[in-house]
Image (cartoon, rainbow, N blue to C red; front, side, top):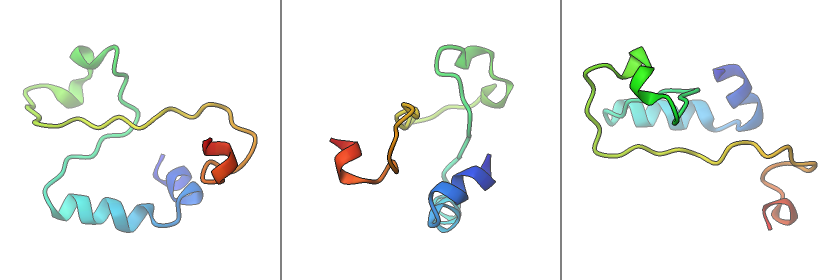
Length: 69
């Protein structure tokens, strides 16, 4: 997962490292409809959960301004 993230977003590694240094917990591939069954979340409490938009099968680069519109 991290390799694909870095391929699509070259600054991802540095951003993730900074978030971890700040004490953030970072989890990939969390099914928001089944969080209660995710063993990585057992006994964890969060004050914020951030979900990014899923990939929508776009034809252009995801950061292309015309694609974002």
